[in-house]
Amino acid sequence: MLACSRCPETYLDDARHWCCTCGGPLYYRGEVAFDRGAITGGPPTLWRYRAALPPLPRGQEISLGEGFTPLVTARWRGHEIHFKLDFLCPTGSFKDRGSTVMMSQVARFGVGRVLEDSSGNGGASVAAYAARAGVACDIYVPEGTSPGKTAQIEMYGAGLKIIPGSREDCAAAARAAAETTYYASHNWNPYFLEGTKTVAFELWEQLGWRAPANVVTPIGNGSLVLGAYLGFSQLKQAGVIETLPRIFGAQTESCAPFVQAQDQGLDHCPAVEKQPTIAEGITIATPTRDRETLAGVRESGGGFAASSDAEIWQAVRELAALGIYCEPTSGAAPAALDKLMAQGMLADGPTAVVLSGFGLKATAKVVELLAGEAP
Ligand SMILES: *Cc1c(COP(=O)(O)O)cnc(C)c1O
Ligand SMILES: [Zn+2]
Image: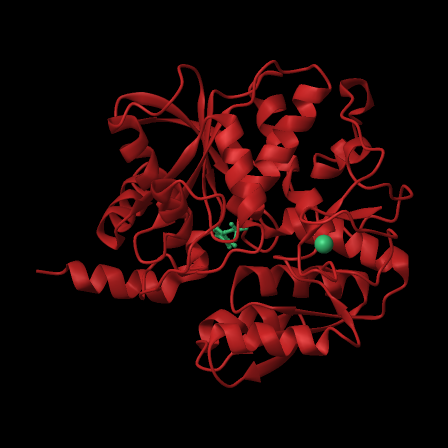
């Protein structure tokens, strides 16, 4: 069953609904329960946690071997930090966690065509898993999106629809088209969110069956932060961890609606302006699941922190100097970590930092930034 979080409406667990008639985002509500005994062997992918995912007959996974990404411990400002290399998913970003679970359900429903709007990693990920499923796919991108960003989408064989106007115009065009096909949106689709929660299960398993004390991840719309919250909540319900880790969302000062909400004590994100930034994957001015994300982060005892482009680039540089090459968007997380450490916001115990996208995704940007450093 799918349930609205903002009104009492529920919907059948099928292919028709991506959003409530009231406009609220939908959540999957099913008989999923985390059970350590049910963790299966087999290939090291996130499907080992299938008992805690929406039911799917075995063998029907639309999978490219995603998940179970390395957890690398490195010294950062004198502390041992656990960096989760989620950029080593098949398309180069954590979005594959959501796409594999979403496209597996889409294929099960017998949907033959999907669409998504994204100029970046979400579009590439959905396009890849649609290709894997043999499902036709259109990706709507705003006019002016650089060819460097759309090349990966095109390579997977998706139809690229270039929409004149802003990112918001593009989303509106996608939603209008979704009246007649399936909206496989990484922001709206409830099954996508079910996939992102596996990052919590992996951290727990990789840290020796215990939760970290703190988790820091970049946040745009919130699927990674909210996924982590949902995953750790299920581990707590199952009685295998006692407390949630503090969950922190890392933003860019160029677009920080969650930080604004936190500072103003709001239960939703206020309207914000967005400025150009190197962390383009997290410049989301109106996050879809803002209320649920704010509530979850608050319950965890975590919070939000924003960094400048200079701080983010510095963090990307320093991580690379440790052998870890993430894209600038992901650099928001270690940059936020520095602030959280300085402010004494972290709980005692292991700290995990999720690195969401691969440095190789942003070669053109990195070339530019390196050139800008030259004396
Ligand atoms: C999409 C994305 C994010 C943000 O994820 P949300 O679900 O929008 O919060 C962060 N980093 C990278 C690399 C991304 O592609
Ligand atoms: Zn509703």
